[in-house]
Image (cartoon, rainbow, N blue to C red; front, side, top):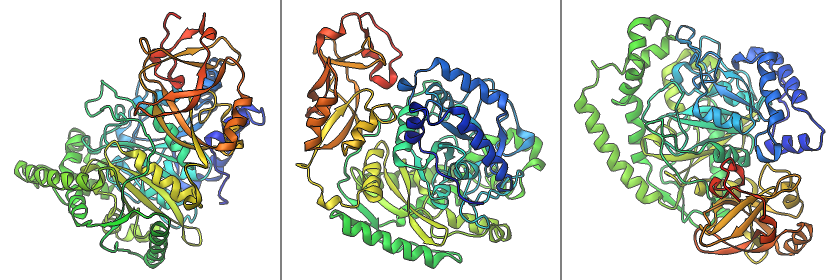
Length: 584
């Protein structure tokens, strides 16, 4: 199988806008790739032409400029509900047909995304290898004899082989990060509760996180911006700040040399040493962190009483259908029965976790920790021969994350050998994804970071059609612009939808009636800011925009005469969310 061209959200949008591609043409190519890769066991359910057509037809009612995922194909792990399509969690006998979409699926479809189907997974999200499914072992995108990583195996390979621009996974112990590393992808696991898990079959309900796989950091951040919302219908959902990229105070590397394992362990060790050396060369604020407490916390997840939560979530089903489980899955989940662990064991573990959590957050507040995502990999045959030990090794640097309330961003870090991807994970405290994203962006893309100065690049606040994924983003890129972060204005601005074709935003300062508005900060070469001004038609222009932290930057503003008769969308909080209408 030859690896397919990656699907990138911004490239697809540009192709749609320029009429170089149609949504139906993209879907036809995806269907062809699905046929060519059936032996990879990626999909459990693929939508039929008739089912896809309802989503394509629905795009006719959506304006591409205001729907950042218009026509973008995505895949869904089969423990996440898609209305009218069976949810199996990779267990045929467990299957049911949900009447409504999971919360995050609904948000993505409303933004214009098109679901391609439901992907294969380690049964009941119990595994990090991608081989624990009655629907077949999912093959690695680069070397089919190797594992794909789990439990979100099919979701990662679907993106890696060009069948989706992004995909949804879940991550309780590393399932949104290990498959990213093994298939050369970005894997974003947000803070626990930042994305609602309503409509997702629970693994450990108190720890479960949806996750996203994408080919670029920008695509992962864009998806995050759409689904990072508090869901009052889901008990573990909470309001977590939007990603605002900023440099970490300290970049921690592990004090202890990570353990590497398997036939490819030495290859992974060399890649880690090379990456660590690059980090130390590129960044001046590198220190070392004792990771033994993280390892202790990781052990609690499967070798301690927390596995009881997996059993509790499926107890009623287990009691009547234990024989329907994949053998190794049954062994692990039933190992969490009440007979093995007492309530006292659980409370002791909880108390120790709180101690480690406080210690970890004290160190990581404002900083990040970088670890190898995996210390090696295995062939599928090796995992079949020893399914428990190999799986445990794949989670050495992932299992601690949710127990300690951390967010994580898995990023590619080159190749450890021929067609052998290697990746690292950037950890940060809850709500501090922006630190991880900022570091990852510089590590991945900023090859001349040391040469860049603040005087050479000026921040510009963008609030409308120049934002990422919108039609005029290309103007900023052509001017040498670099996306920096998403933030908000001070609560002193009104936003209007102007009576133009296409519709454009009008940001007007009004201290009495204003509210905070979401904006993107781009960095442009100083010489390009003047060029940008000549490209902006009246009544829009550039002026000083006050941000939520009190600083002022150059940004897009509108002359007040133009808002007469325009739709006041101030309460929507930003151009991406302009559904709330007020009297102008």
